[in-house]
Length: 145
Image 1 (cartoon, rainbow, N blue to C red):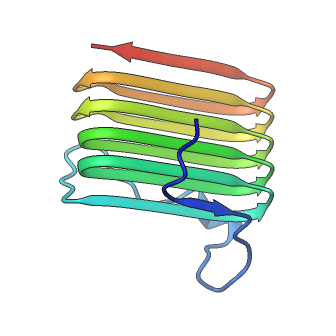
Image 2: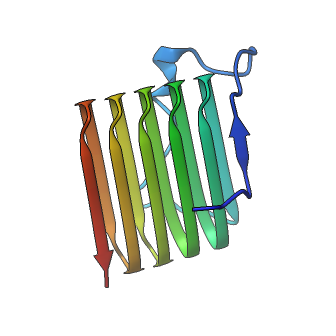
């Protein structure tokens, strides 16, 4: 995926960044949320992390939080009333969310090393969530409606 609308590489240090224990508590409220416009947040702590977040449409929320090293996270959203969140802690994790349509929600949480997760959703009213703890796991969710 070559989406470079919002890219943050190796953003480290600074008082504006939450401590490692707080990074897992990124604010995102899926059920019943009302979003106006487009909102994108990328928080990174560590080294060699890559995050890309691209949104096209209305009422969109994208959130990426990375703590650790050598992790990759990508979110692509096209449509309306879409929410996506990726939270990575560890080393070498890869996550991707791609969704189009309306009223869809997707979340990936990774804690460990060398995990891979992907969610693809096309349609209306779809929800997916992946949670990985440990090392070397791989999962893919595809919903086409």
